[in-house]
Length: 255
Length: 272
Ligand SMILES: Nc1ncnc2c1ncn2[C@@H]1O[C@H](COP(=O)(O)OP(=O)(O)OP(=O)(O)O)[C@@H](O)[C@H]1O
Ligand SMILES: [Mg+2]
Image (cartoon, rainbow over all chains, first blue to last red; front, side, top):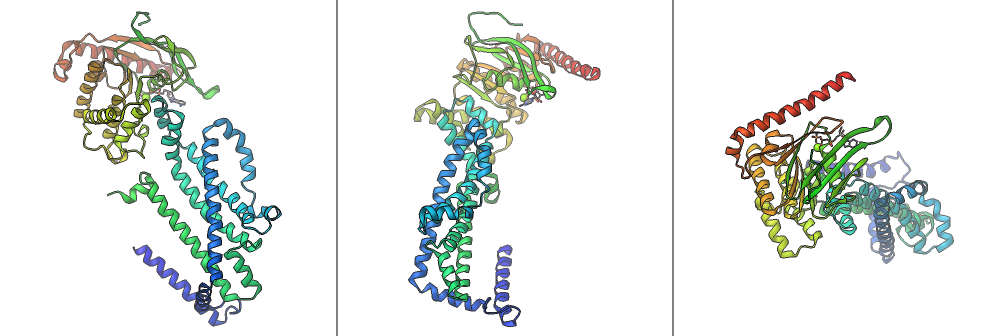
């Protein structure tokens, strides 16, 4: 409770600073308009169909990319992690592919899909996939040896072991992977829209920039920030839901 | 040493050796173990800490391949976890699944075995009742005390109705009174179900009270020091049996063997 209050006070102080600094002339208010102006511009664009269309596009690209990456990352992680030979065979390839920044793939994406939504989707899926895969691999490797022996001694079938032992052990990692992937996916969605020009908030930001609409530009930036916060909070909420039994959650809910 | 090939021999361990790792860092956990058990026998295994008791059980359970020697069950070599066997692990807390409730933990192996739903419900309820946990089926293992968790693991093995039950220090975390109750429970189950039981313990009194035989292991490098036959009456009772002069004689004898095992280790350490 006290933390929440302090947090709110922090935000208020920051907004106040944002409001007053441009008035003092410390920075040029052509590049940093006061907060009230950003808010007004945001209110204006919230009245346009164009804004809501762009927000919808961004959410669709982000959601689709995240879903694809999560499904693919989880499936690949469970399979690779469960087969030692496969894990050893893929380790170096993964270490090579993973650090490639997704933005380096922009030319390739444009070549393949032009300025369609798919071009940005590729970037989103590529970057989010690794986050999920790495976490799921760590989760599969974390299965307790005694629990594994227990499952083996009771002669659990492979399917049962995967669903009743490996998956529950991996779930906390997968949820973390989901949370990381959600943030990265949002970043790449906006990046793709901004640079490639696929439909969405990012493209609106680029348009605002070229037309010198500084206050609306900041307004849009604030929206992307808020999106990020919502994404993170929802992921944490989901974490609590599915991990009631996990040590990180159970202390907080105990009695 | 029982190397007889009597007709009702169930489990046989011959020349079992297990070395963990290789090169200079290798640990010879078990040097040479040979013994056999008849079907329906109750054999207790005692030995100093680190003697390789858990290693032995894991080899018998088909969870760990021996370095050399072999384990046979019904004259078939054990190469993986055999059918009809249940293990109560020393690390009871880690052997329970924290995402399942107590009842679900007990139920899962039964499902996997293909037991019908109504029968499963009965087995789960009965086994939890037998270990005194009838009132917590919907709790999670981590909400229970160590001793209670240990009893969940025992209930899970009991509900499974195995032909062979391996127990690795299953009562280490429970208080003295519960321990006595569980000892009687195990004796009773063994009698009723006619199972074969291998029971590892640190407690010499417990080994004699429960077993028909007590295998005393040496310190590492581990061999069988002696296979002690417990010639006490079949029906045992915490008071009468433990006050039986024969019980005391056996206890003194086994105690001496264990001391000898420890001294052996000390002597080797001094020599090294
Ligand atoms: N996975 C392993 N890798 C390497 N060494 C091991 C491993 N497991 C056991 N050991 C070693 O093997 C020896 C026997 O271990 P084990 O756990 O079988 O003993 P124990 O008789 O069950 O001991 P305790 O009574 O303390 O449970 C010990 O020296 C131990 O350090
Ligand atoms: Mg042990």
